Amino acid sequence: MWNSIGSIFYLGCQWLLTVLVVRIAGVDTAGTLSLAMSVCNIWYCISVYGMRNFQVSDTQDKYENGTYLFSRYLTSMAALAGCLIYIFVIGYDWEQRRCILLYFLFKFSEALYDVYAGIFQKEWRLDYAGKSMLIRGVLSITVFTGLLYVTNLVTAIAGMAVVCLTEVLTFDVFHARRITSIRLNRSISKVKELLVECFPLLVYTLLSSIIGTIPRLFMERILGNYELGIYGSVATPTLIIQMAATYVFNPFVTLFAERYHQKDKQKFMRAFLNCTLAVAVISVAGIIGGKLLGKWGLNLLYGEEIAAHVELLIPLIICTILTAFSWLLCGILTAIREFKGLVVGNLLAVIVSTLLSMPCEKQYGMQGASIALALAVVVEIIVLFLYMMRRIKKQFS
Image 1 (cartoon, rainbow, N blue to C red):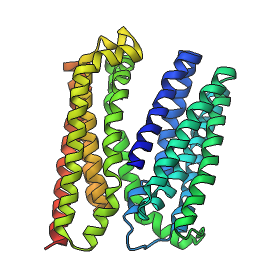
Image 2: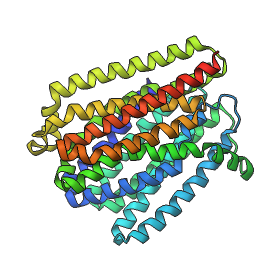
Image 3: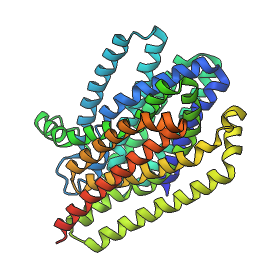
Image 4: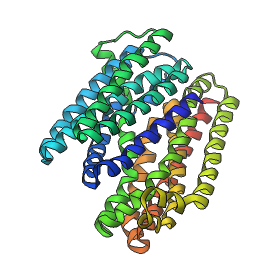
């Protein structure tokens, strides 16, 4: 409960930033922040390396906590180097470059926290993780909005990055050292072994982030930037449902790994059914809420111009529900080390999304993007489920 509450609160604070920046500094400043977020999210994927579920399901302690921590420093430095090259090659102006680099520092605090959250999860102390996110949520929203109001976006991002990184280096490090041994392991051979073993997870993470991006890229080309803006605005609140579902089942990844290695099929499948039921309950609540309060909520957040397109909301909610369930299966496949299935399932989803986006959007407009995405994720879910069943049938035979 601590973890779920903290995660949802932190997500809400990060989403609120995108709303407040428009209110305080205007659309142009919001565009710069959106650019920084979009660019850094790509490099953040490289920084975290898709390693969280691997770490928390390493119940046999194949790698030490210090190895995971040192590998995060190395992947983050590589991501920073890639980000630097990217922003100078693309040719952004000086303010955009500063915002992107400072926002990457903020994302580094999240990447570093991700390792300590994995340690908390393995030790069954996710209350520390939840409290950490509550603290960082309050700090980020307070410092960012305060500095943005009296100064500018560059200073606001810098302040947010500093306070969030400070929180991780104090609260998270202190509590992690209280419950387990953490000594930085600089063994290059061991880190190399870890990164090589987790490389399929990096590929899967990048593919997974592309699935939902492809329909939007086609939309910008086919329908225009205005329609993309409307679609993106309606889609943003639906992410709360998706993330709420993932925060509920993510703590179970360690449990799946334990039951798998113990060859306890009954408890493994019971955990899977419980997680599926939790996603279903959140999904039903989300659809009912969207149906009853959708237009009112969109009007409150964005105004009548966006609320007029409330028909986009329910299909987008269905897409987020399907994505949440696919993430559950991805977490399970990581726990049972079925990396081939992860890559194949997400690769097929990318292919389907690419093939269907253009014809669907030409035929159905903005709704076509949701149709293409939903069908792509359904294909992914089927493939992931088949790989999961094949692996557990072999393990529990």
